[in-house]
Length: 192
Image (tube, rainbow, N blue to C red; front, side):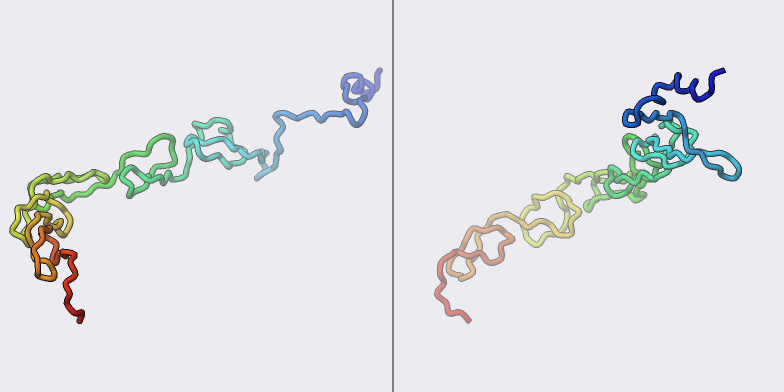
């Protein structure tokens, strides 16, 4: 009978190789094991990319290792929605976020009352511009040439009319809203 050692040396060519040329064999499928509560479990980190495509599984001894679809991401998406004011509350996911679920339950009525948008108004909805002529009381007697608006003050009247210069010597053609137009001539008065 052949001793066990000599039989092994004949089958393993690396056994007789010089020390410098020996290669370490990689052990495939071998996992470091540990005992937890009397059960054998592995310590290998899963590191599988989750279904969201952004985060990885950090569990040890994961039964679904390598199966991306089985790894649902538990983090909240939190990306800014199309409305620009709210964030996605769904679990982290691939693709586009849903439409903003927020809404206003007040009707939109323009200042003149001729343009309306009935509630509910989804968040991010662009409110319509009223194209009717502004109906507010204006400081001048000229015809109003701007449309209904939400701003508190109306734009200044730009109708040109003859106005006395600040020096009082001449009259100038200036915009209605210009209070004291200047002719540009030196008035010659003493400064106070």
